[in-house]
Amino acid sequence: MRTRATAVECKALALGVTLLISTSLLMLTEPIRGELPPREKAGWHDTSIVHDQEGWVRVPEQAWGKPHPPYDDRWKSNETTIIVLVAALRESRLAATLQSAFDNADVPARVRFGVVQQNAPNDEDCLAKLCELRGKPLRAVPDGGGFENPNGCVEFDQVRVLRLDASEAAGPVYARGLQPQLLQDEDYCMQIDAHTIFKKGWDRALLREWAATQNEFAVLSTYPTNYKDLDKNSNHHWEMPHICGVQIRSGGFISNKQAGAAANLERPLIAPLWAAGLSFSRCHAERWVPNDKHLRHIFSGEEFHRGARLWTHGYDFYSITRPTIGVYYGNEKGGKGGWYSNSKEHQRSLARLMTALEFKDSDQSPEARARLGEFTLGTRRTIDQYIAFSGVDVRKAVSHDKCIVEYVPWDDAGLEERIRREELELAARYARRKSSASKTSSKSASQMQASKTLSRKSSGTETFPARTGPFRMPPLASFTTDAMQEKMAHPHAVRALSPASFCILGMFTLFCGLRGLFELRRRGMLRDLHFKGRRAQ
Image (spheres, rainbow, N blue to C red):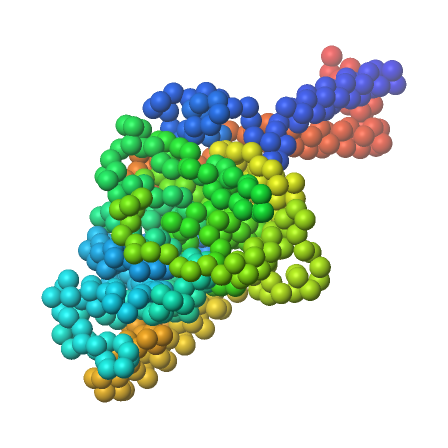
């Protein structure tokens, strides 16, 4: 009798061991975090494909990961504001850029501009030129006091201009580092070049693209297409620029390579690198990780520096699925010249940049680190993680291209509350400014833009509901493919279990089964069951 009971237990244990071995083998075949599955060749018209050294390959589902979903759904609202930030040095196409943005927005009233304008005395002011194009010319205030708006130019209060003399110019990073002075309580921030053309409906399209990332900390960023190709289906499979690698030159100069290509994207594709020519995100990215205004006279290296800081602060870069803006390239840009570079300041800036990135042979002394101030790397991810993610090893000064990367998770504890608190403070601050301005005369700050004095109509104190459930993707948009629409409509559809999930489930089942058997044996119930079975026979 005892032999019979022991045999039953042995069979159960043998089954358990078999399950354990099977699930262990499944675990061995499951890619570990950071190792994507082997590349799968793709056809020309397959969806979500990238061109790399092996040709066109599919992007595995694993690449997108599970980022932190948006904290609210304000992207749906027509009241949501977008500020377009531009650093311009003697640009002749700047007014046309402003005009294109307002004329082609689905909701022009939500658009704001923040322009760091560096002009020579005889150059046209961008806002004055825009209002002239509208047939509503401004009136200059004597002694460089800005402009009055006697003819009711509609966009007057939607454009803030920080006016500098071109002789004060010290490179693009310095100018972009002044952009935070132009922010108020906007929801989304967009950085572009000063010679840009906007596609019809660009504002709603970018908001939907951002929402499609399912990531509160998403930054849509890539090199924009040529303005001539803005309305084209490139190569008949919606080929889009996708930045995969950098060039590292002697002296610590890091610059993005010419963009690679992704095609038929079903949703924005996570990317390893940031680009200055198009950057679209929630404005907390611009407030928390601004351009370093102390990097005077830096050109090469600014993008990798800002990208590394954004990424280590928790932000992720995405290539967009369809073109929304186009730019003039080469001799068509319309610029009237550069700036006078100061060699000593440039060398100091380069040393500062290399210290921030922990570059090979850089000064990592406590004094050098302290001089960085707020413009350091973040702490939500490490620089070592970014080296592995981007393929750019700043410590060894080597790099390799990575066109397909995998989302790296991090902890966002406390950030939703912090963002909501800061937004309420900003809304209250600019509501007070609006109230104060309304009590002044017709020639007050609400009617005048003085040099380095900025005004706008506040968007009030409207708040947005906190995230209380699963984030729902945007309504189907005309710029999406059928496959993208299906994913957007059902972002949380139940999927088949992955090998790792099956492994965990199997081990849990084994544990419960073995525990039950040992409990039965302890109580002598296996023997009782055996006797009852014999009597039943």
